Length: 332
Image (cartoon, rainbow, N blue to C red; front, side):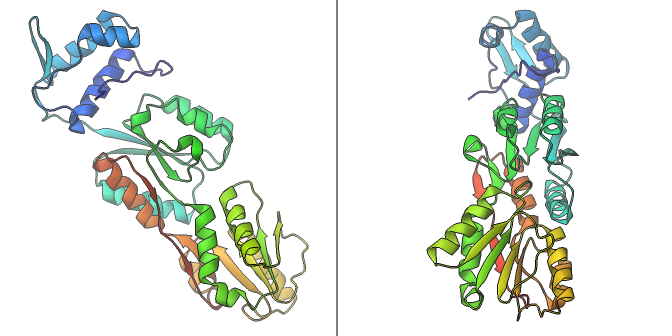
């Protein structure tokens, strides 16, 4: 069982990384009272660092009463009763009502078990890189939303692997990392299948998919469904200057496009749910009342935050697909 890791790219001094790693191992019960620590020589050789660096770390832990030494035998855990405040690095893509639900649920479940700092990369890979590099080695846990940023996976892999959790979207490059995520291909397919008896009254399904923020899995799942059931469909990048035709059903991931479609329907005097239909993505309280109710495909964001916090608190390493549902209202 590995209890010490060192990141050579981190700005944190190596002796401090050793101190933090041992404190973390004790707090997570990977090291118990009287357990023997790796020898100074072993740590020095494994990480190609000087014996003095390892000794400096062990001496600091001795001074704080966390470990003790037996001459000629090595270093051992003396106390598991010490104040160790974990620091959690949360890197989200953007701030919106869904992310607030995740964050608030995570905060409530963690319940003061650590200091939480949240950052946003706004789908900018340079900002993502800057924040990852600055955080590396300075936190107990790293919770990352990689979204669909090219190069994000490689940057995530520079962090201490045992301390990284992937949130909301994952991919094959990150399959070995614990995660709470949506399966976008399966989710949209199964949601449309659930509403198929209502979808059948429409002549064409249209997915508004700009492809910048939206997970590619949405598009794949949508196309798979339409192909499997021989349904006429179209994928468009934007809604601008489009006329809504009779019996079109719009699948809309972005709420800005939702507003545009509703505005256009009013210009054309169309009745939502009769002349055309809408299925929006991501549940919000407002969608319960707008236009007598907007149907949504949505994951449970509060559950996502709660499951993530529980996984961290219990030091679990799992890949969990968060529950996703179709909520049927009057919009189709």
